[in-house]
Image 1 (cartoon, rainbow, N blue to C red):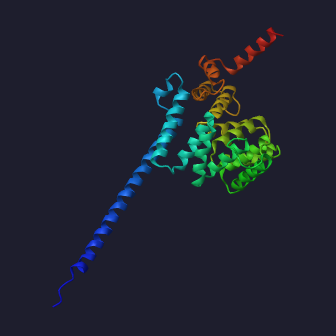
Image 2: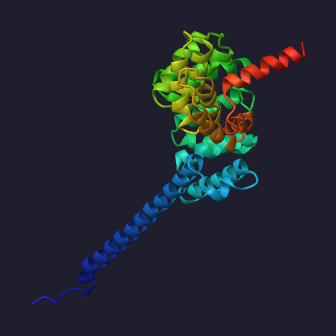
Image 3: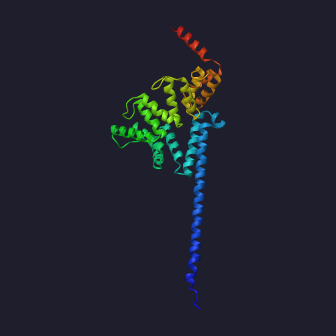
Length: 299
């Protein structure tokens, strides 16, 4: 009878042990990554909630707008700390830094999100380059044309951010685009129908003024309302004005007060003045009469 070779007998046992340890390591790593993603999503959602439903202690602070912005940015940074590939958090951070005027940080976060496949981040980068920020390598004219084709390509693919930016180019004659407000309205509508709040605001403003589309206060109020519900401060102010004046919606000073209060929290110009007028119960008709009397006294 042949004696068993001890070295051979150990091989299957060692292999099983290695496989088990590798599986355990992979499972631990997988759980760790899952936990990191969950933590990142938690902090990102918290940042979103701060935008739409800020806590009372922040609203009652000396500078609520700045306190909310600071707290929101901390939440976004925490999200990226847990998950460096969290595209939405990276793009939102880029937007926050852009609003603060820190274009170096804005570009860095946009670029990271763009590298991870975010079309919104790519459009945001193109917009910065188009406006001479972010140090594009292309000559100005060539850079403009590149940005315009960039927006066009993604807009035609159905990306809402690109559609909005492409519309903006036609609205204001940016990036070598001709000023064509009808074209702007077309692309704003495409983005607005997808729920993109900045486009809803711009489209509402075009309907209010009758530029590029037939003047229609009902349409204007509808688009303002959709953008306002997403936290767009200017849309909140404009919707408040529509309710105050009874344009496209029934005249309702309480509704006007509500929307002016939201815009005021975000520091939108004139919102706090209109809020106090509504609180005092001064109707639009009274304001109009007072303005005419004041103009007559100075005539």
